[in-house]
Image (cartoon, rainbow over all chains, first blue to last red):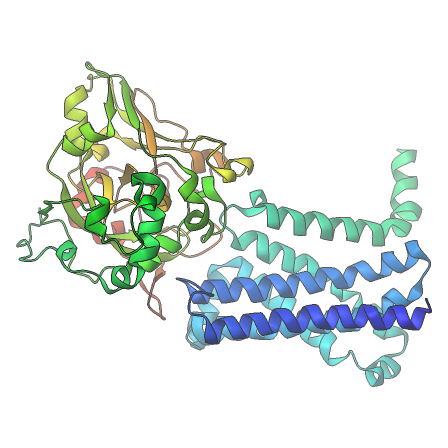
Amino acid sequence: MKPERRLLIGKIVCWGLGLFQLARLLGGAYYQASYLGANPLDKGLNLLGWWALFFLTLTLVWTPLSQWTGQPWWKQLQRLTGLFSFTFAVPHLGMYIYFDQEHNWSYILMDLGDRKFILLGFMAFIILLVLALTSSRYWQRRLGSGWKKLHRLTYGAAILGAIHFTYRMKAGLRHPEVKTFVLVITFLLLVRAWPWLKSHVLPRVSKA
Amino acid sequence: MLVRKPQDILSSEITPEGLYHDRRRFITALGGLVGSAFLPKVSTPQATGANLKPLVSSPWSTQETPTSLANATRYNNFYEFGLDKEEPAIHAWRMKTRPWTLRVSGECLKPQTFGLEELLKLAPLEERIYRMRCVEGWSMVIPWVGFPIRALLDRVQPKSTARYVGFWSKADPKEMPGLDNPVLDWPYLEGLRLDEARHPLAILAVGMYGQILPNQNGAPIRLVVPWKYGFKGAKSIVDIRLLRDQPWTSWAKATPDEYGFYANVNPQVDHPRWSQRNELRIGEMSRRKTLLFNGYEEQVGSLYSQMDLTRNF
């Protein structure tokens, strides 16, 4: 199969998954009273946040995957899954501001101080916002080599997102979903940093 | 001590709207318990023998509107049946609650094993409409049916060496799929100081909304301590022990800096990761202020008069 065709299939799968999850959430919220359950606010926030982190993690998968398989087309899914992560993060934050904090900015400021994971979530969102705004080819050309560096912030957003999720759950790292996200993101980070670790850190360690 | 005039009509005598709409699902949930699966689909709760009557109304009850039965039975933290709040309602039917025995032992003169029928007759069953505040920041109002723990303790006669009471929940991997999660050290263990357990507000519940407890809410017998965070309320209790020393309760053991032994509801003492200042009452759309001791300060405050509540959280 030609790489273009594979890329097309990959795009269809990612679009399908993203749109399906969005539709399920919106449809559930509007048409099925039991879907969001007894605490619609919490469940809505949790689902949106979960999918934002899922697509963010997926975005980190493509680079190592293209290296291992020797098929660079995987990388062309980065923008799509990254933007889906942002697409889930926007209503996630919106629900928090509008419903959870009743769009009262003094509550929100207080909450940012009260709950560290809220601050971390905000920081992750700001990164996603910057990356989404500069995701177009126009910005890619305009920023030149700086664009690649800027978009490495995806890793920062994923780390912040993972800690945000961990802190939010009562059982923290003991929760199997939290544990899985943290392990996968850590693994992807190590894979990405491996060449650098090999040339910078390991020689020093072996000398000592 | 605050004593209110008893209500004229027990709230259990009014069919809650949620129960009315939810009756079939409720009966189905009870199916394994009382064999109502063999009854025609349109049986009434009375036909299942599930009603707990007569009930004595209690001056300790709040006048606040109870949470709908639908919400109280589909939004549960019962990790033995899964970490998701909707999982207990899906899986809890696997738990066999009859026959059931509760062993009471330890530092007492007359250790005994009680059958469920004995427990139901131990003391007059009272309806206690209590606020329930979860450590996660949400709350409900539940009309429990039960009796003071004191009534049980009087039967076994604690020795003077007994200072704490431990409550062990059932842990049977065949019935409880959530036990595969090493989130907590199973079986679930909760505990109270003996004077807390003897407080008239602290009850063992066998029912709610005038009916026997649904499995996901901790059938057939559970602890309810309304001035403490919900996780103190051990569900499906099989073992109660009078102890000399403070037990290492499950959550305190898992994360000692986040969940203390006392776990008194306190808006001034934050969870390390979130504030406890306010709560979302299930069924409402905006938060309300959390009250010290969940609004039971007048009744229980004296238990902690000598204590630093920030250190003993």
